[in-house]
Image (cartoon, rainbow, N blue to C red; front, top):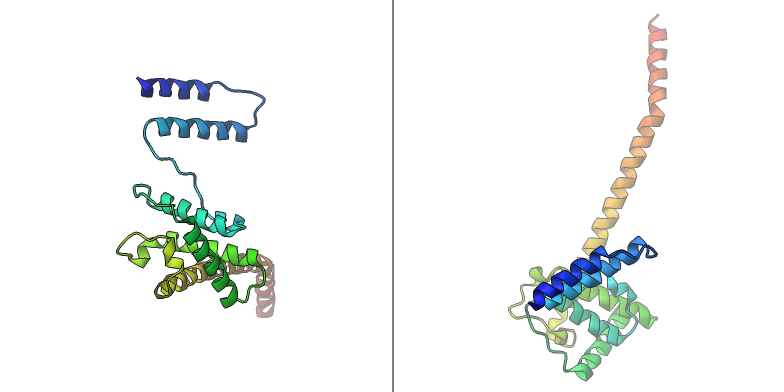
Length: 198
């Protein structure tokens, strides 16, 4: 009965429109109502977190981002967050290592870089072939440095591919424009050749 009532409430809330709200606000309200309904139905609802690493500001943000990506990637696994002091220590060392290796003077840049590494790990999780689920401890183990190095390679490959694609689009557009510009001259060349023949 609880599920039926929840469905009725969802339909009522979605069909009742406040005309003073913008389309974005109505959409946000619909998302909130749908998430509430799914939670009642027993589903775990996780907000999308793509590229939020650019908004990370602190060591705690890095830890939270890791666990959000973990829960998003492995929704059926249980994650333990009860070692906050240990995670903070690992995250601090992670940021310091990245800052030192990349000669980053600004801590904020190092935090963002660490977030990008975490993002790359979870985007490419299948390529790592981990035998057991990862935990935040991978950032503190010297023998797991290969994970960070691989993540950096994935970031660089993705960036290189993106730049290559942009470069190709630019050249295709340039070639198209040059083709359009040079076409009248081709006509002039044909006219000139025909005049030479006469």
